[in-house]
Image (cartoon, rainbow, N blue to C red):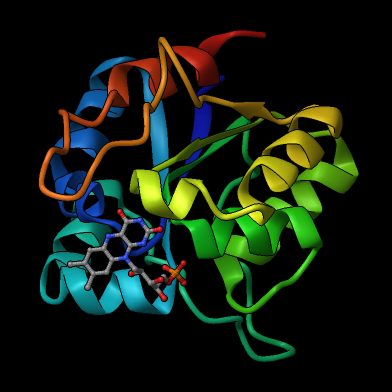
Length: 174
Ligand SMILES: Cc1cc2nc3c(=O)[nH]c(=O)nc-3n(C[C@H](O)[C@H](O)[C@H](O)COP(=O)(O)O)c2cc1C
């Protein structure tokens, strides 16, 4: 039976690497479905169609209309990455402004496998809400890849390669 990964991206620069990340996940045996916040979808532009072709599934961003079909297979695991400060806080607070964030909120309620890897500048990470949100998510059973081995907040203009491998490994853990 195939393993299905929901790869959910928000509007931080590593989301532009999604075509490569999807291909990597597929080469590791995952069937992949891509969700993007509306801002992330805007950033990716025509690559959104490329992602739909690559995965064989429509890219989800906004909520479907009542009565429309879901169209995706059931997830084995989900990765929310890169996760902006905005999105980390939204999920921790239980807000559902777009489909990918709403999925993450519900995954917590179902105790489904969810990996969140933030992507925030050090000045954003210093906002008092950020550590509270990370703590809330971890207490709810979410694997938050923040710190050594995951994403380490960086100063503006000093971004390190985003550790996609850590997120894929975490999604594979049972
Ligand atoms: C070039 C650029 C880079 C950005 N990088 C980040 C980032 O690394 N982390 C972050 O939290 N927000 C970043 N932002 C701000 C987010 O894109 C913005 O907060 C947006 O509203 C997030 O929306 P979303 O969480 O719905 O995707 C960046 C914005 C721009 C224009």
